[in-house]
Amino acid sequence: MSFFFVILIICLVLFLFRLYHVANDDYVLVKKNISLDEVFNCAFICGFISLLFARIFYVILNPDPVFFSPLGFLIFPYFPGLSLLGGLLGGTLGLFIYCRMKKFPIGRVFDFFTVSLTFIMPFGLIGYFLLSQEFSVGGTVKLVLFAVMALAANLYLYPKANSLEIKDGGISVLFLIFFSLIMLLTSAIDNPGISNFVDQKENLIYLAMMAIGIILIIKQEISGRIKIKHAK
Image 1 (spheres, rainbow, N blue to C red):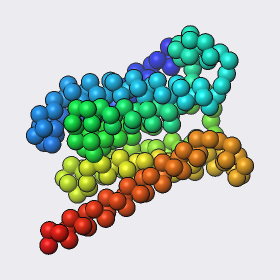
Image 2 (image 1 turned 30 degrees about the vertical axis):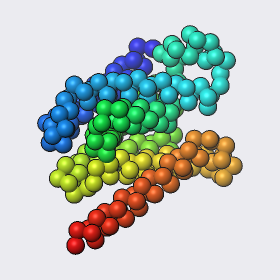
Image 3 (image 1 turned 180 degrees about the vertical axis):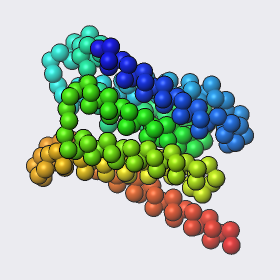
């Protein structure tokens, strides 16, 4: 139980550290009078929603009787089990609603949260390996690809987005595509075969997420070309 909490706290601290670094004194947030406290409030609220969805999805996908009691569901450190997919979907939904309510620049804030998330994902996966003792070829590949994605997002994409070479929201859409692709690839490595692929319900959601990401990328590209054409 204590180790589980340690991993969560480490990931939370690292996430907030990176979020502070990317959001602090951002000219768009400053222009809209959005303080760093408001960004952090958003992070804590979305973090709670993400944790709740991660637990709900895990219970749905792993229906063990122990989870059907209130204590079994709520005391997750004693009865561990969180879904990365559920946490991602819940956090995305919470962040979108919060940004709409507070009139935050949605694309830019999503990029800040995405960069911060990619920063902690390798650490979280290492913690999962140590906690579950579940090592596999697919898991190793996933760790390597998460690390590559973190480096690409933080060292290459974020500087370009900050200098307006990438549109707001572009990093988040790319993350959606490549995260889904990584999860599908590593699932196929550990569980080869079409029947095994279909049996894992998360894969169908990852396919839908990847399709949505591709559609959003195409939409961004088309809208950008239309704006350039009208400018001429």
